[in-house]
Image (cartoon, rainbow over all chains, first blue to last red; front, side):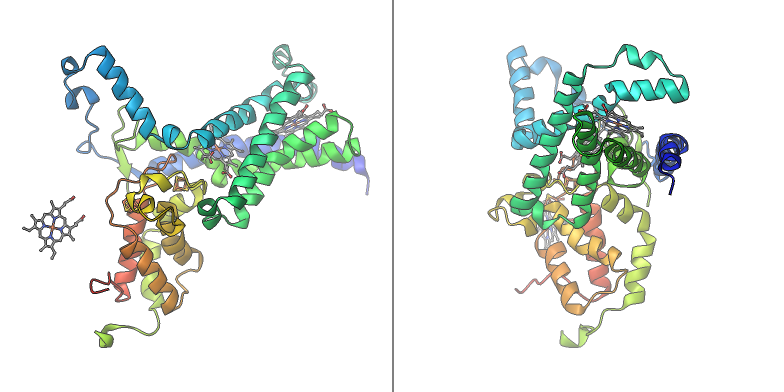
Length: 232
Length: 126
Ligand code: HEM
Ligand code: HEM
Ligand code: HEM
Ligand code: SF4
Ligand code: SF4
């Protein structure tokens, strides 16, 4: 088997394919989910102002109320998980955009040059990549040792976690020259492409659903002024 | 009461209820990150020393979720376990909070509906 053909395939057409599936899939799934909703003007979320007279609360009371609310939210109940989750997701979403090699490849294959102006230094990408891996490790350990998480864990959860972490691990190792560079990069690109393709169709779609459910479905935790409810 | 109990679950009936609510079940199952952040929002979980069987996501994943994955092919004993989850371990107070916005009580209600269709109800005299 000629390896160059495989490399050209996964670096060329497959990148196009995965990016297309990623973007078209997100659009399709968003459309599909939106179609599963009905606009229901009767279920209105009552603005906070109408529930609590603004005058009745002093500045201090208002602040304490907000603090109290925060204490009752997931942030207050599970501060460690929420904090780790936050930096995990931030680094996971931002790092790939600022990897120098990605910008170089984008310029080489698609002629998109401006991205490289913003690229980070290898030290910075290494740092954020390390954060993703460390947080991922935390999630794996949590899944194994915390009883309530284990109770709802399936093999699928570990596979998806592994899939999310593989591009980061292999990108890092390739850059550090550990293992065989070309096979490391091949695994890197293939796992990255698989991840992009699966985002719209797996639990990774929570990336969209998280916001979709908050901004379109009316309930006491929704944001904005949503006027829809699920139609089943 | 004994005459009321079906020894084997009526699969077609379960399947028709599952089919009717397929979209709803699928959204819940696909979007649940299995993160367990809903646990503390349930007062029953809090008052049972953190027994996972009272965690909101556990209650729908191991009832409707399991029925859906097995396409309704479950034994009477398994259905009775699910009955305990959806009737005894949840009061449908709708206070649970899921960061993903999954309607957990709706899914548990569906579990109750399937149980009722198989003559399984809350054990009032337990
Ligand atoms: C889809 C096609 C992709 C291609 C062709 C590709 C290619 C590359 C290449 C060539 C490197 C450089 C390794 C080196 O410095 O020698 C790299 C690094 C990296 N890639 Fe990708 N990549 C892809 C997708 C992804 C995805 C989807 C992610 C993450 C979600 C990702 C995350 C990273 C990270 C974090 C690094 C840097 C690791 C570090 O320097 O510590 N890549 N990638
Ligand atoms: C803006 C986009 C996103 C938001 C708002 C978001 C939000 C969340 C939330 C609320 C959780 C559950 C809490 C937790 O366990 O940390 C979660 C879990 C998770 N997310 Fe995301 N997410 C986003 C994007 C992504 C993407 C793009 C990926 C990967 C491709 C991803 C991978 C994961 C994984 C693997 C978990 C489960 C962690 C575990 O095993 O406990 N997320 N996300
Ligand atoms: C004077 C007698 C009663 C009063 C004042 C009363 C009052 C209430 C109240 C205030 C609720 C809460 C509603 C909610 O939180 O949504 C409730 C719920 C309920 N009551 Fe009663 N109740 C009475 C008699 C009964 C009787 C005799 C039964 C059963 C035979 C019963 C069965 C229920 C049930 C099953 C619920 C829960 C309904 C649900 O959450 O969907 N109640 N009742
Ligand atoms: S909080 Fe939501 S996503 Fe997390 S386990 Fe509970 S139901 Fe699933
Ligand atoms: S509806 Fe059920 S699962 Fe949700 S908080 Fe109430 S008792 Fe717990």
